[in-house]
Length: 358
Image 1 (tube, rainbow, N blue to C red):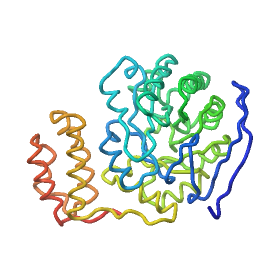
Image 2 (image 1 turned 120 degrees about the vertical axis):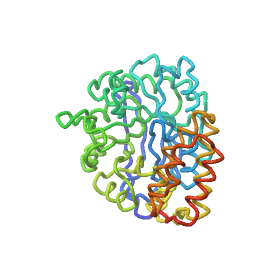
Image 3 (image 1 turned 60 degrees about the horizontal axis):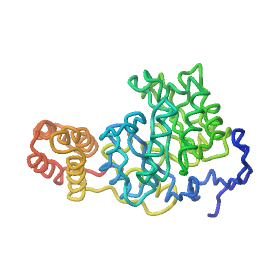
Image 4 (image 1 turned 135 degrees about the vertical axis):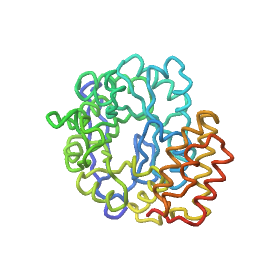
């Protein structure tokens, strides 16, 4: 496309000794982007979020034009021994490349999980080096791997060996402000065969406090010859453009900004590409989306679990779109265990007294 800046280079892996020709389009978000030959429709991606970006959420984001959606984090050990919940998370989202995120700290489990994911239809396999949750880092997975670069690299090598699919890595800036080693981890990951790097602009010790820092991600962009994705606090097209400008990244990844707004990712992707963006649903259209999301969660988890799992999503829709957040029906809506009552309340609360979120 006009205005694209294209970088061509030969990249040689220290481990395999193989050299490949790479072509990377950078700077102009209207340029096309692909991962290992898998073409992406735009440069705005839905982030993996445990318990949130399940199949119903991903399907909605995909339908509204997200460039890529990522599965919830899947524990490699549990997947390898046949855990039903982990296998459920492998389900694809129609219409987009199927990107599965794996987490773990054992080479054997990551190897097995990658093979299972590929057999289940994964087009891209992402490795989690970023989750800050204690239950993950206490098991020496997620962002704890930023503290052990050699071992982190061995996990990427294992997954690359195990699958024929492109492998990517998602990480943070570092463990804390005294160890901002994302460029080193990224270099090692790419040397091991990773074909894209996503960086959340916080350290592990920040969790989700303060503001994401996009500018330090430029150091990662300059360190590796593969596309880098900027993540963290991207809640609008304007902020997406600023994140790209500060970081020099090739694409953006949206997480919490899409909660209650699954169309936002597609809107940002279209805006970056200079194409017509999908309109945010209002009135009866919004009601239909909320009901569809609710029913999708019930179908995904079963009614007993689904009625509770859906509450957070309904609450995010309410927070984003209710003009009067103190309506009496809100409490009933978020506490009811009766799907028919919930749907009736959604139709009542979202009927006209709403505004679209830009």
